[in-house]
Image 1 (cartoon, rainbow, N blue to C red):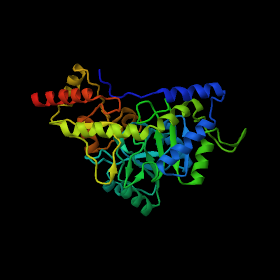
Image 2: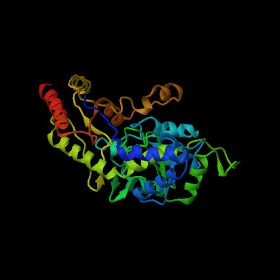
Image 3: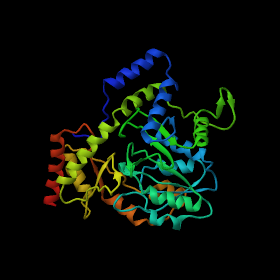
Image 4: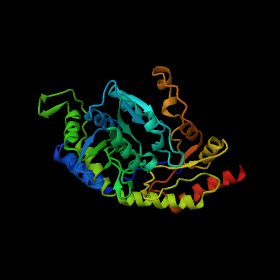
Length: 360
């Protein structure tokens, strides 16, 4: 079986973990600080704040900006549910705007129509490793006085006109094992705003600015030095990993037939967290079964848009029609693109897809 994802853990990560274990400093400590500094440098920002997951990074970032009950946050319906659930966690309301059918990201042309007096922020998602149109989104936010919080959980190292994901607003990243780099579990918040950085640091650690002095309600959303040691070793390999993903995607684009392949608009660096195709004519599920039978891993990200999820429709009363997001749920299929793929693996993926599409 060629897996859809495969974390690459080497001797560097193993040695880094052993050094932390030998040090006796297992919780948040010097490795977390070193990881934060290196991550901030990678994104080109002044501050990075490590958390326990990508979801807690989103949660903390929203709280740090004072978003809460009565506020609305505009976001994408076509993403992992944590993007929207984090808005619910702080008592605010997710407002969904349909996606661009080419990029799968939120369509900036539709955002202003969704802005109301209660709108506090825009939370674009850089899906599958391709950034949203942050130039257009920033311009809209500036006109309306809105906060921008980037869900960059799938886009480590992606950029638009040389400016990296996480440097356009307050960035949030996931370090889950399937991401472009991992810390086994963890998250990161990035910002150039010292006040927001301090807010995040306080919120993630029980509301403390001084030890055992709790100024506000906070959470235990810290990262351990064990996780940070893995993440720091992985971060040194990010460029290498991303280059392999791009090369694999280039091969797939050049050789797949009969399906819609990903595009990278001018000025963007796509880091291919996922390589997502569109399968026409209702053939997606049949192709998925064919891949399974031929030992090719795949993923369907995502089979249900967030505004159509049971909790959102039955408990929250969402009843929207967002045609591009809904069409994507019926057509998308992600193929392996990770750095562990061999030339033989890539040839097998192409043969399986093309063989099915040619006979369909």
